[in-house]
Length: 121
Image 1 (cartoon, rainbow, N blue to C red):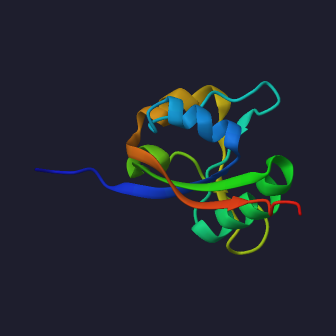
Image 2: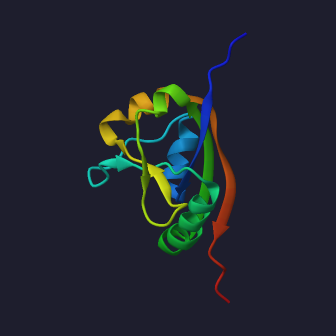
């Protein structure tokens, strides 16, 4: 049995987007909003942690790091973009290509880290 090579990607997300992923059965990312022309999965867990913890938690009270596998041959069409330092690497997937991108996810999207705002006392 031949299996296709996959690439591991991470996606930092807030609670609203995560609820939509859960509603898909953990198999797809939701369509982008009009003000979101690009979907940004990232190439390493550390970068995803920083975004989930440092941006999503202050913005929405919770941040999640998700991990998923995608067909390597398909995803190679998107060049790796360096968004800052050496390890700040992401892909830029145009919103209009997200449905096709989702079709190439292998397996399920899984939550691997969670961050929550400290309760006020």
